Image (cartoon, rainbow, N blue to C red; front, side, top):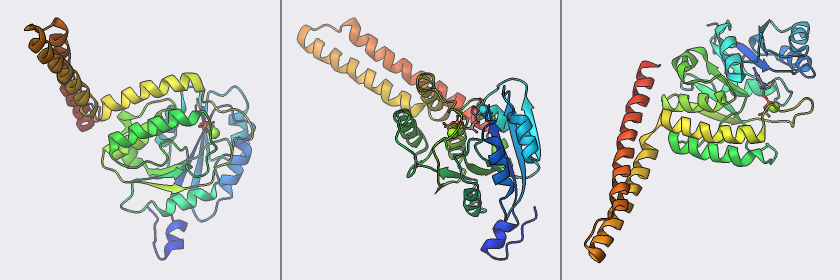
Length: 299
Ligand SMILES: Nc1nc2c(ncn2[C@@H]2O[C@H](COP(=O)(O)OP(=O)(O)O)[C@@H](O)[C@H]2O)c(=O)[nH]1
Ligand SMILES: [Mg+2]
């Protein structure tokens, strides 16, 4: 790596980074994004645009605008799949992900890079102070709370598209990363659960001016619920299974004791509740073993 840390400024100056721009039908904005990234000084960079099966001229425009690499997926494979393709084709160890819709400010990349020191594995843009209020916020808020519960850390912005990390840490957790939009959420959580250090730095964020967001409130709302379930079972099953199983068991026990006192009879319902409690506990243990194995074997 060509890093010569003389002073703060030159530490940034010498960094070589691969900037990845995942794009799906962003012909209206990709030219401006690539040009703005090209104008970014103080870093040695390559710009990789992944056109994820767009039906418009995204790839051609990215190429004309001067992207170093334009990689095309023949069909739409998802945000996460696009990042994976790009990382596999990246020249440098430091990876930056940057949205194709002009919502991010390229100068913020330098800000994030400044915080990617030897003790830090990933720096994530934090939009919490500047993001407009929307109906999407409820799902996001819920997901964020679950993520904080699972990681036992404060997470101001779980899934910002502007982030920097190292290829090496990325490959360490690759097996936990999905192909779709939940990629960003999983990347943050997988890093935290693997004891990598993640920092959050406030960035500016503009509303989308052209094109439409690919997130859909209903399907993505449902996806949030599946995602929460998936995250829990992957990362920390017992933290959910244990309280639920204990609740079932105690309810059954209380019901049983009350009925024995009142009728000298243990009702089937009480036994059932306790059995469910015990079974859930064993399911939790099993899930815990699988989660542990996945993490150790990087399955
Ligand atoms: N590779 C890939 N990128 C996508 C897809 N959908 C959206 N993107 C890109 O992901 C980034 C963020 O998407 P966007 O729809 O703006 O999401 P939002 O900013 O959370 O509303 C943009 O650069 C999009 O072009 C997709 O299906 N595949
Ligand atoms: Mg956007």
